[in-house]
Image (tube, rainbow, N blue to C red; front, side, top):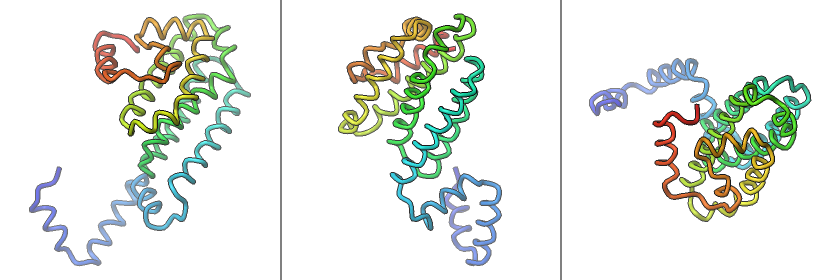
Amino acid sequence: MFDQDFKNAISELPSKEKDKLIFRLLKKDLALADRLYFELLDDRTVDDRRNEMETKILRKVEHASERYWSPGYLMMDMREISGDITEHVKITKDKFGEASLNLLMLNEILKQNSHRIEKATPAKAYKLCIYIIARVFKILMLIQKLHEDYLLDFKDNLKLLGNQIGNVHHLMKNSIYNGLDVNWLLSGEIPENIVQHHKELKANGYLK
């Protein structure tokens, strides 16, 4: 992104000048500031932060479920929670948490709202179903990027997710149509070509 001459010039700046530039940049990039604070001063570990996020997700899902209005509003609540997870990952670089926290969100949303999604008309449930299916693909691709030993940590929750999807007609129908094989979740076996499969689905107009 930056050529070596530019990097060298910055390295040669006096310390006070570099400090001023850093503080000016941090004011404009709060995510970077939070990450630096976590790395330099925060006494919490990545696991601590992940545990806090799990509690936050459970609280937000419960709140969204208590004030449920429609599949569309539920999807908006899920987008907000997804944003919280993204911010957590930016700060902590928690790749395991990126998969596990998204999995927790989907399982809790379905646990508390499956009956509502089932009662909605296919048209009203469609966008929410597509959002959930797209998120499932993301989770599977994230898990595949981790060391294979981690797969065991996800198997039970993947199976739970697969069963919950199978119990919601709208969701199962859209999963089949959009190329998501629920058996991957039930067995905990992620296809090696999952990334390519997802790319081809998107290119052919699915997951929209």
